[in-house]
Length: 170
Length: 112
Image 1 (tube, helix red, strand yellow):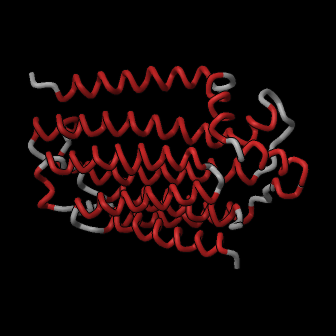
Image 2 (cartoon, chains in turn yellow, green; image 1 turned 45 degrees about the horizontal axis):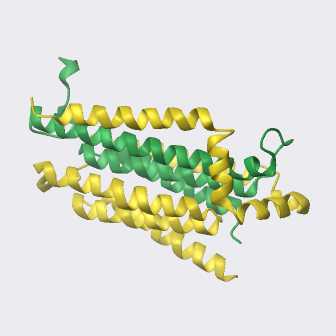
């Protein structure tokens, strides 16, 4: 068992434990803190997968911005005292989620994936690319993926204006 | 190195825990938090696939595009999630201001 495997298992325990904390803990504020822990563990997974740039984005956008927004929303709505109650559909939701989990795990182990480690030439080329991720990512974003890139920019602007328009005092 | 299956199982666990939260919680903010967990599960699956799966016949962009497509997808998902959470929380605040509650079971204006 290598160091990477140990790190993976530790991250997996932290990530799934805090994800369970998010949905099960009654205190909403603590649930939001567990959400931050889950985001940070996810950044760790990205580093293991040699996606360092994405890990930084994950920490900045998810652990930094989105969690702060969520904590703001928790503070500004006074239903917090009531806590994180389940609704009537809760048992049905549990069954649905468990069935989907079983199906996804089954597919993951039955997939018959064609792994990149089976062809050493391609893997070497991939490692070469992954060693300089940010420059390759930047080029991809303004060449092959330029249309979705612009659309996401427009979407962010629209979301910004929409959010301001929604919460503006009448 | 952990295998593709291990990453897929973690990602599936995130997605399903998030799904359970979305379907079973009453508080809108808790539903939004669970939604973020689902996004994260999808991101992990995308990055893991692009790291482990042998690309098909290389088309535009060559090996760089093939090796990084999953990461580009994940970046777009992060951007869309940020937009979604900003709008979602604005909607939550508007809802709270107008109805005095953020319990999803009590938002049934269209039922009547």
